[in-house]
Each structure stands twice: as structure tokens, then as C-alpha cells.
Image: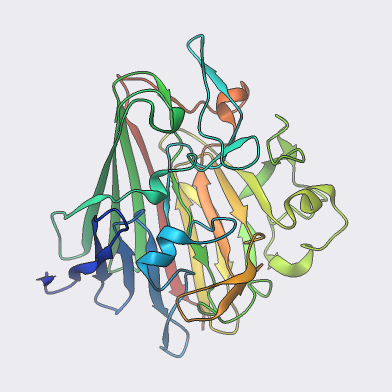
Length: 366
């Protein structure tokens, strides 16, 4: 059964996508604006499966990596790529344990001695509830909601989460994250989409130009846990303050790139002020003319060049994905913040609301 809502300027479609191994129905939503820009996502993990935008000749292509079946999202082998998924309760890594109000917690460990992206059964492995929200003649939105019980993956508190996906006629796709808890907890939410502006399956993103509004980053140890230092990007391969190709320095003799086998680091976004929207990144593919500008209220952003992709996963187009087939921008709080006193706090109190937003603006450079 297909449900269609036509707002005369924008379009929302809903249909069945499949059934999980546990018998849960998964829905697919399509958002389309008046220019034909289209975003598809499924309620399994809130995963964004396709984003179609035009190139400088008006040709539309999907510019995000993803699978072509629900079974792949459920059973992806090897290192989990988290294609397009909503990540929680805690995006990125927590080292072993953390203390909160004098009590020690042991989250689910799924990457050696780390809790990565919320543990073994994070938000990316949950079926979210979805509803079409009130529309305007400029923007349409779908809300995704999830309840995470006290103790889920070792985290305290009953957590209620709502994520709103919106598409407007300015070719802006936005994600708003909101959450409440009934007891003190830690939280870090993001989305894990991989971008390739040449089109999904069309080769490496090393020929994309990248600019980051980030003067610092958080170096990691051999376990990919931040050392606690906030280091300057100056005179290192981490410096993207001026527009340059992603591939310019990815193979440089630099210890941080060796540890991560490429870029897999949290960058400190300049000018952080609670709830203030500011620029974080600009990505441009000269051949197609496609451009992505990213804005966020969050203090940091993980940059990941798909270093765990080894050609053993076939994506949406049926082509095998390898390292640098896409770049993930993950606006978020810093990794391991519960164990790093000098990082922005990720503690959420029952009296507070977690409320953050990221905007992806697509355009064409002729």
C-alpha cells in the first residue's frame, strides 16, 4: 500500500520496504521538492538510502552510499559501515567505561575495548516510528521517534528521542535531534551518511575539494580514543581551512593517518556557541559541479573516509565499495567526552532537552 501526500509544492510518499527477521514492518519515505531533489529513508535505523540531486547539466544522481535491501542493512558483514543511519545513544567512541554522578557504567563494547556508535544494538539497528508532520508550501518534514529503555546498551535513563527529517525548496535537507531523559545520562546523536558528489558507485572522493571551518581536532591513540588534547590543524594533513582536494595528503607520513588508515577524526568546528548555527564544511566536485554546504549547531564533526570498506560490500548500484568511495560528515559532540573533562559535556539532565540541528545545502557550480 502506498500513501501519497501532495502539498502542491512538495511531495511525501510512504510505502512498505520490508519485514525484519523479527517480524517488524519497515517503511520507506520519499521527500521530493519542486526542483526534483529527492531524499529517501527507511524506518530501520532511520537510514537515509538515497539523495538525488542534479549536476550542472541537470542530470540527477544518488549521491549517498547505501544498500539495496533490508536484509543487507540487518546483516551487513565485517566492520559495520552504518550507511546513512541515525547513531545513538552515543555517536563515536567511549573507552570501556564512564562515571556519572559517582556511579560507574559499562556500555556495550563492540569495537575491541570501545563502545562504538551506541554499542552492539545501537539506534542504527532499531525500527523507528514515523509520521508525516505538518507541511508548508516551502518545506515538508517527517518525524522519527524511538524509546530507549533504562539500561539499554548499558546507558542509564529512559530516553525518548525524536529526529525530524526536512526538505525544503532551497534544496536544504535538515536533521533536527531532540531527546529527553528521566534520569541523568549521556547522549551524542548524529547521522552517518557517506557522500559522493560524483554519484554513488562512481569512484573515489579523493578528487573532491573540501573546506572545513575547523582550526582544531582531537588526536587519537592507537585504539582511536582521543588523547584529551585539542590540537591545531596548522601545518598538518588535517588542515582543510583552505579549499583542497581530499586526496592531497591522505597518504602523507603522518601518525594520525596511520592510526586511522585515513581520515577518521573529530574536528573542532570554529565559533561554537550553544544552539548557534554555523558553517562546518563545503564539499565540491568540479566535474559534476555539485556542491554541498554543511551547517550545524554541534561543536564537533567526525570526518571519515570509509577506511573499513574493503570491496566486500555491494551497494545501492550493485558496485563494490572501497575506501574513499564516500566521505562521512558526522556533526556531533566529541568522542569519549564522558571521560574527558575538558571536552564539551554530553551529560543530559531530566530537566533539559537535547536539541541540535544540522543542515545539508545542495547546489550547483556552473
